[in-house]
Image 1 (cartoon, rainbow, N blue to C red):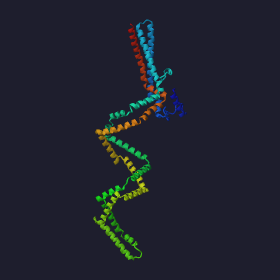
Image 2 (image 1 turned 90 degrees about the vertical axis):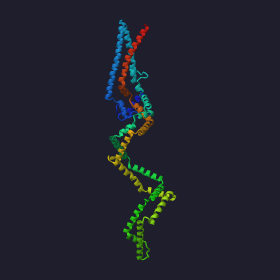
Image 3 (image 1 turned 60 degrees about the vertical axis):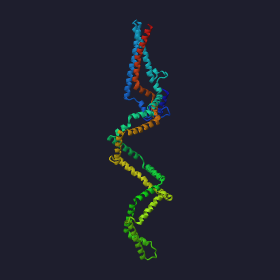
Image 4 (image 1 turned 120 degrees about the vertical axis):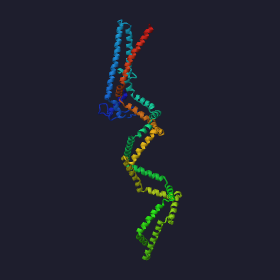
Length: 466
C-alpha cells in the first residue's frame, strides 16, 4: 500500500473507529491532498462499491486474461515443440516456427508487463514506473482537470459550441408551443410564490420603508409639486374641486344655521344686549350663506379669481422661492417621520405580497394570463426573427463564457479533488473492470504481431545469410 493510501485509511479509521477500518463513506468525505479539501460522499461511494454491472465487467476481464495467458502458453508450447523438432532433424520449417513462437512470447510478455504496470507492480516487484494508476492517481486527476479546463472550458470553445447549438431559435420554437408556455408560467409562478414565502415580512417592510424614506429625503418635492399645480391651474383642473367644496359648504351652512348663529352670539361681548347679539348672528350667517351661494353659482365670482391667482402664485413660489421650498421640505420630513406614515408604507408590502401570491396561485388570473401571452409572443418572435435570435444567443454565450472563465478553477478542482478522494485500490479495480478487457487485446495482439514480426525477421535474416 502506498503512503497516500495508508494516510487515507488511517484518517478514515480515526473518523469512524467503530467501523472495521474502512470508515463511514456514507457520512464522511475523504480528504484530498491539497489542503485536506473534502470530497462528496457520493463520489467516494462511486469508487468504493462494485455494482452488478461492475462485477460482470470484471468477469469479462478475467476471461480475457485467461485467453491472453492461454495464447502465451500456446506459443511457448509451440516454441518448445519446434525446438525439439529442429533437434530431431525435422527440417528448416521447425526453425521458422520456433523463431515465430519465440518472438510471440517476447511480444506477449512485453505487453503483459505494460498492461500490468498500469494497475499494479508486475509479480509484486517494486519496479520503477509501474503501478501507475494507484501511485499517480492524484497526478492523473490534476492532469485530467487541466485537460478539461484547457480544452473544454475555454471561452472560445464554449462560445463556438453555444453558437452551433442555436439556442435562440430552439428556445423560441419551444416557447411558441402553448403547453410549454403553460409549463414555464406554472414554474415561474411556483418560484415567485416560494420566494415571497421565504421572505420575512418584517425584513421586506423595513427595506421598503427605508428605501422610500431615503428616496423621498434625497429628492426635493417642492418644484415638482409646483409644476404640477401650475399645470392643473392652467388647464382649469382645480375648478371642479372648488365647485365641490363650495357646494358642500353651502349645504353644510343650510343644515347648521342654528349652530353658526349660536357660535357668533357666543363670541359677542358680555355687555351687549342679547337681541343685538342675535341680530348680529343672523346677519353674519346670511352674509356668509350669500357669499357661498354666489361663489357656487357664479363661475366668474371675484373670490374664484382670487383663488386662481393665489394658486398660480403658490405654484410659482414652490418652484422658485427659497423660503417656500424650505418650508415644504421641513413639512415633508415631519410627515415622513411620523409613525403612522411609516406604518402605512410598511403595510403596503403586505397588501402587495398578498395580491401577487393570489394572482400567482390562480391559473386564470390576469398576471398569469399576461405572462403566458408574453411567453407565447416572445417564442413566436424568437422562432422567426434572426435579430432577436442573435440577441438571445449573444446573451447565453456571454453568460456561459463568463461562468466558465470566472469559475474554471472551481470546476476543474471538482475533478481533481474528487479523484484525490478516491481510494487507490478500489479506483484501480474499478478502472481495470471498465477498460481491462480491451487492454487484454493488447496482449493478444502483441502475441500475434510479435510472432509475425519474428517470422519476418528470421526469414529476411536467412535470406540475406544465404
